[in-house]
Amino acid sequence: MKQAELTIVADENIPALEQYFGDLGTLVRVPGRTLSREQLTQADVLLVRSVTEVNRALLESTPVRFVGSCTIGTDHLDTDWLEQQGIPWSAAPGCNANSVVEYVFCALAALDVDWSGRSFGIVGCGNVGGLLQRRLHALGIRCAVYDPWLPDNPDAADLQEVLQQDVICLHAPLVKDGPYPSLHMIGERQLNWIKDGAVLISAGRGAVVDNGALLQLLRRDKRFTTVLDVWENEPGIDTELLAQVDIGTPHIAGYSLDGKLTGTRMIRTALSEALSLPAIAVGNRERDPVICEVMLPAPGESAFSHLAQALLQIYDPRTDDRRLRAAADGELPMAKAFDQLRREYPERLEFSHYQTDAAAIDESRWQELQILGLELA
Image (cartoon, rainbow, N blue to C red; front, side, top):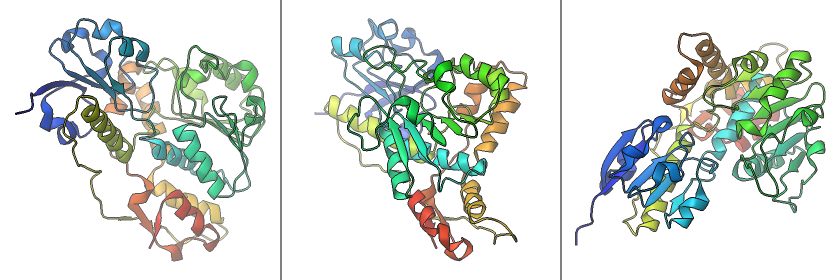
């Protein structure tokens, strides 16, 4: 018996839709930010990213029988309502965790902050924070972790202790209720716990940090370095806050091609299981290793600067920072410019696609590059 064709409505920015879903029926691509119920009157399947709120208002009285979000978070999905209606759903937890972790190290490289000998605080130790923790352990770096859902974590500490480390990485999901809400978990009081000279990197959900409180603190006294990839009120972010941070990027820490394709593949697998559809054997596109040529160190150049140079040849977040600041000064409203930067984001490959000549890297940092995922030629 021939399989009935499905109508699949999908956010136009999900990559490889034809590759992963084209065998199932008709693909209808739509802008995720403005998706409406009227566009779902014939839809069997809805595929979204984090910019689409999926709830009763969007889905009631539609024929949608599966919802997939090709992203790691679920705060944009009303999962209680979906389950009450018997609509199976899936997100793609962990799909871009490696991309976000690489963003953290590239941000530190861009700031010329040598992570060896520094202490790290991690807020939220799920797929992203957990991977960062494991990578830091492999590098021999001390961590303190705040995640009330994981009290048995070997690095567990209270929030104040975590925020008093040298480098603080925020990777918590946005939770608005329940026993451990994370909305504005980092407010004025908590920001004042951060010590002078520390680095704060927020690459989870923007509203975990009270952006208004952060702006007021940075206006008064830039005691610490701030890197924001996520913001409150995206896409209409606060341009005054952007002007105050050291590196600001448009929610692209997890935007590696590898992470995007993994998310798409995970949702196809979940859809096949939920609706008893054929599986599809498609992996991430194969690539020949890219040679990352590293210049010999200049006289007096530190071993870390040499290592940082290698990472920044692969990905330099300052490029995204410049794009975002230029967009803020441009003619488009900030919200449209922010979305455009994400929609037109250039292809970014993860470290594993790159090789570098071991002879060109200071011997004391070889192992670090391998731990971070580069191959040594």
